Amino acid sequence: MERWINSLMDTLGAPGAGLAIALENLFPPLPSEVILPLAGFASATGRIDLIAALVWTTAGSVVGALALYGVGALLGRDRTVAIAGKLPLVKVSDIERTEAWFGRHGTKAVFFGRMIPIFRSLISVPAGIERMPLPVFLGLTTLGSAIWNTAFILAGYALGDNWQQVSHYVSMYSKVVLTVAVAALLVFIGVRVFKPGSGARRS
Image 1 (cartoon, rainbow, N blue to C red):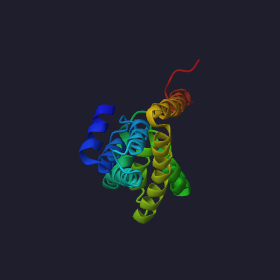
Image 2 (tube, helix red, strand yellow):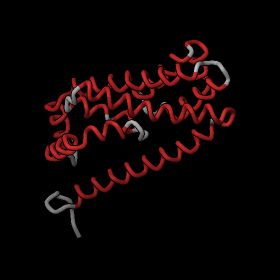
Image 3 (tube, helix red, strand yellow):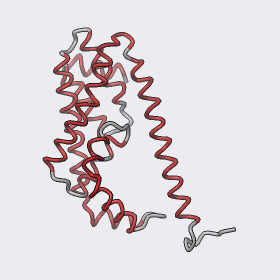
Image 4 (cartoon, rainbow, N blue to C red):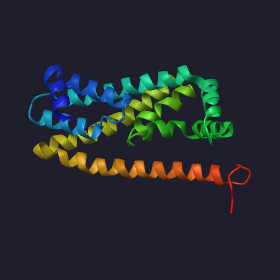
């Protein structure tokens, strides 16, 4: 992964870091906690310009998020409800509650979601489904992404050869987020399976 990112930056300069971040939005397994500190380290060694790294990675974040927003917009509410209706343990009422929640908290979700691993990519899809006004979506995504990217690029810049320390701590943070998400999913499944009237056996 490091060799691939370094190759992009050696070939394209700061736009290479932006391209890597755009792809990270589309394919969450690509780790921003490696890309961003490595871009900061590259800036510290003079391989790319620091300001250019900040600008291009933020632009990459916005482009990737916009692509996923487009997926959500093309999917639309009707298709989402139709797909959800075919999934086990998911009800249309779940979608309606999610819509209501997003209507109340969508702007905060898009802004703060840019700083949460995994969700920083996924949050763009419901924003597209709900057709959040594009200028609002772009503004919140740009601001949230700029904060996240700047923090980790500057950390990599300051740590120099020790930039991997950033990846270590963010990786632990990502694992905590993933654990919480899995636990929430298991609770949801448990409630659906064992609630009265679900058809499951009860002791």
